[in-house]
Image 1 (spheres, rainbow, N blue to C red):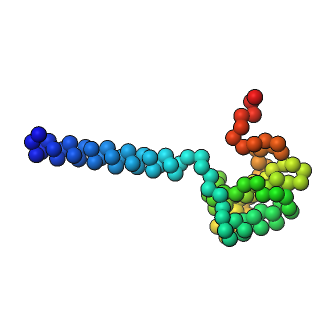
Image 2: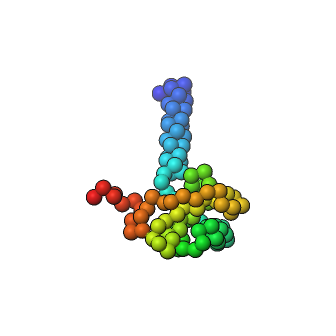
Image 3: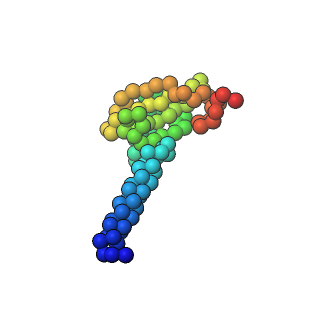
Length: 112
């Protein structure tokens, strides 16, 4: 192989590797993986959510969901679930009924 051909082949391989690596990194960060809250962030988010709902049981927390900095899913005493959305200062910016019913496991197909 001539030097110019080696250089072009090497450059093409390098571009393919960089492009492929970037694709893998994007796929890893754009998946459905939800990152649960931990430590003092968890404590503050749970306190704010339970104050908003007047009690209940926290069943899930996550960072950066639906435009909120933090999201806390709470099962209320009547079995319904509410998702409380918080800003970065742990102030409630909204809440909504969660799609999951009281006996529904997330991710299962309800069409069965």
